[in-house]
Image (cartoon, rainbow, N blue to C red):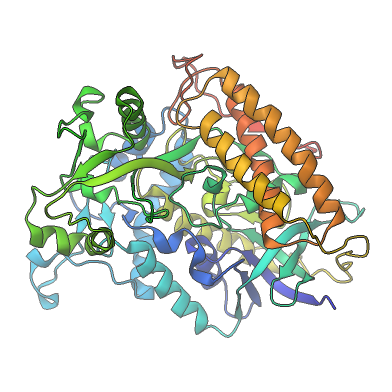
Length: 538
């Protein structure tokens, strides 16, 4: 039998944004944090580079703001950029207080001599401002925050719980639009339970799984974006999908990202003959923003008909490489590549969803009681291209802002009661899951071929035709069979793919991560692409 649960705050997603929100909220609140797989399955755990913040005396807020605006191709909202950067130092201080083991800068001596943290530099940044934990920053942050959450008796961490859909007053036929919680599939029992909450936060990550090749874990299916859209939220700038330039190219190396910090420390991109090519594309060469580097690699691969290019840091001392990049070193060694002596074969792969659910400075969406934070959201920080290591910073700053906003409303909102149970009376067990598997594969292949690094009108039209057929098939399947994680994810990802395609078709220019051969020039005026769902009432 399905069950009913009540919480003050329901957090859908267990990564940096979700855990930060849960830990920042008062300890007297009952908080549920959902993870649709294991807790560590999100993108946070796998983040290597670090967190961008103004920490060094030679750096300034103005410099970080300017670098972000330049990388964003004229589409960043300056107020969002300034808000994020101005709160960067306090966010890092909070992480340090939680116990995150950031790498120290040993040249300043021992702990008693007042040494500082080591800061590295990445593409688009004019200063060293990336604080990190070697090359496994995400794991260090996640493990620290998870340990803190486990010590809090008011935080319930629920693995293998998949959010199916949000519950809103409008969906229940009630006056108003408020979010009341969510229906959640418990993969252990197979039942869909009802979670009532005073406030609900979507912290479920991006949608890079829509592409055949991605640096993201399997769960990056745009779940929060799709659920928010169905609940009546606007979405913005979903045509801007960042492709990380350097993922390890090896048949067994699924989704392994080679951190941008290698290029920050002097690694060079080369063709199979050893020739550098980035200086031909941008004066910043290997330190150009990711969209430029990814397009350059894509261009060279297509021009020469090669499967990959090479990232070479072997000219640096071996001790330096193994000390700064132990994760990359060990992982590559597993595949027979010694990066102290050999270049690393790399290809671009879908990495980050720059658009998402429209939110304000507190993470509030169009639906009262519903927040979106982290990669699920569209704050305006990233514009047409996300600058390296700004994404984790956004998670912490906006999660903390959302927590403060929730606290300010506690006395006004009660936990919803008498929510209806999930109705599974008209569905049966599926005996044709091959349809789900086939549609998964078809979706990811045509998105890679038609809505990838370089686009054309004809490719987008073909993608739109195919995604609409898929959505029709998926809706029919969803109506007749019991839900599963694969079906829920496929339904969400196909919807987000359709929104991405629509957004791309509306942008008649090339800007940032959206490059189209039909409109290669950039328009003089920068405008966001905002889509309104049919139910949006303004």
